[in-house]
Image (cartoon, rainbow, N blue to C red; front, side):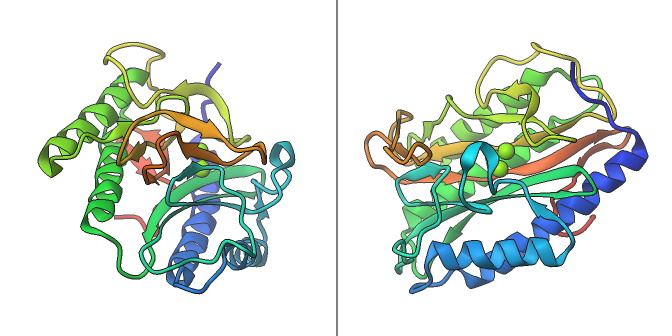
Length: 258
Ligand code: MG
Ligand code: MG
């Protein structure tokens, strides 16, 4: 069963999404060389709580922080740490979730710390383009894997344009979201179109592709959370929470409505 929200409930999700958007904007501005990922986490938690919201990641299956901070070869679920100090040239993804009035928002950005290589900037841009292609497929009457197909083909197109064979992370993907962070359905980031549940007005999905500059194989570290690339290539991750409306996709975690 996929949760279907009323227009009023989507407004509440938008409010939660705005908290996440504001938090990520502040974290983005703070992600400079010499800053630890624990400091970014502190800033995020304070921002979320000041908005009257609750950081959804904190305590989620025991996760100890309010953001996931995944640096360089870390793909997702990196644990913020005082000893992980950002350095010039790092590529960091920050994933953030907040609950406001019982409704969830979930979004991730990839940030360049100082002067980052052109190759890493292209990796991040390709991942972001794949996310937006997925967002555009979040339309009523479509099928779930239309989104998967849009994400995959956009990633492949970016790879051809960049002359880089990006690795696609397939073990992780998007998900339904609403009264909980992770809800049905799981949304693969690759696949043929035209399969899976039909997309209906009032559903909400998190679209979150992850690409690497190398292969798509992953390893989970002994901390039980951090996922890294098996070949230690760098990774990027972008995510938005998107609702299906009569007018098409509504990006609930965008900083402002277009
Ligand atoms: Mg997320
Ligand atoms: Mg998510």
